[in-house]
Length: 122
Image (cartoon, rainbow, N blue to C red; front, side, top):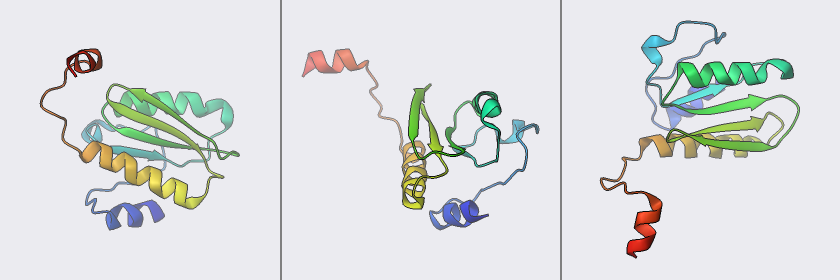
């Protein structure tokens, strides 16, 4: 429940907690941020992350993994999927959460031309 307090402290009013990822999440499919902090065997982490990506198509995802402190980030469909080891410093976890929330709270720019076009015009 520490995440709920932390996110509420950042101004998030709608924070939900679940003990399983096998539930029907259709009502929450527009979530901005999903945090998975479950004790999942390493062999099943890929499948669990894949299920979260499918169930929450627009959400940034913070997936906490066992027994390491590394961070891997995948950029996919205008969202970030962070895989972070639970052995990371707590301030790294908190700053990652803040950044993921800031990203989804920012309004997209009106003129979203491809990067190549923007570079050529400067």
